[in-house]
Length: 123
Image 1 (cartoon, rainbow, N blue to C red):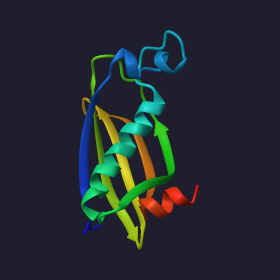
Image 2 (image 1 turned 180 degrees about the vertical axis):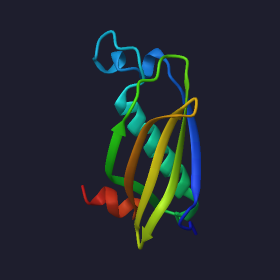
Image 3 (image 1 turned 135 degrees about the vertical axis):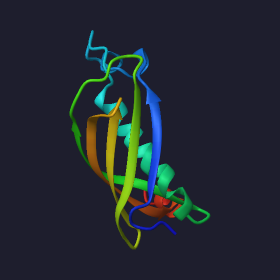
């Protein structure tokens, strides 16, 4: 069972394929915000894995993100997630992204533990 203060880290290298140019902001060759959101979500998903029973997954419901600084192609981003609140099926994470120790993004991200079959049948 995850405890408040549990952490997870993931890294990603900035490539042309995950820049703002790749998502339509032509000639802006820095890490794109949608990829920062995805990296933060993946980090939280990874952290929650140990708390999921068979047939359960986690789904994101909210992310309040500040993308603070650009990161050029070739740099490595370190994403750190910390569980700051857990109540029933609700999990809240404080997430930070760093480029060479410089804070480039921060977010509060909320996820819920759900039964996959029930979730997919609710669509």
